[in-house]
Length: 185
Image (cartoon, rainbow, N blue to C red; front, side, top):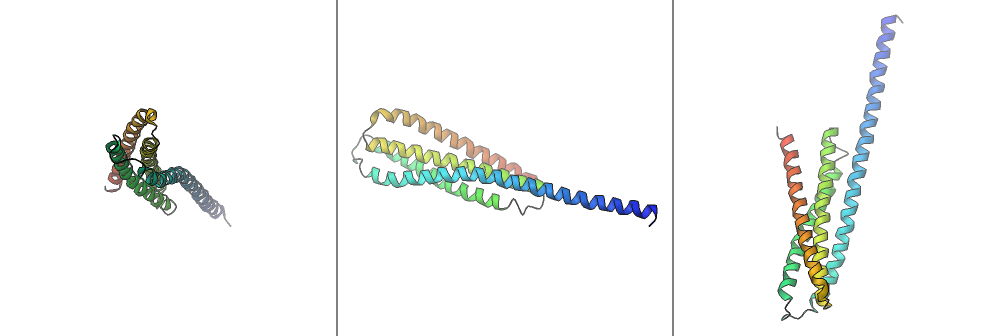
């Protein structure tokens, strides 16, 4: 084997080895993206399950509140807000799971990162929506238990939860738009 053949063989071996190491690093990076996305999804799943339990409890508590109660209108508003945010939370959780499932099969590391970002922000939307549900049903529980001293605190907490959920949804919309624009070019 002459000197040029040996150098060429070493160069090819270096490129192949470099490609293998690069692929391994990309797979490691993808694995980390999946892991982080799954962590955010797990937090959202836990919050959604807590909200689901609150809904089941709330169904029984609403029956305890007299229709002519001075709180009946406010209870209805809380239930409507909880219902709307429940739908948002469930849809966002489904979106987070779908985005996370696409990370591994992404055609590039940049696309994988974008899927991971979508999974994370969708999880945030699900989490914030579930917190609104929980807070709204705390109001129902306090009204049913005649714990009027807690109602003002819960009202403020609900306003804060609704504002936070709105901001998280707005941010999700911005992220989704930016990612869509990036790939529409």
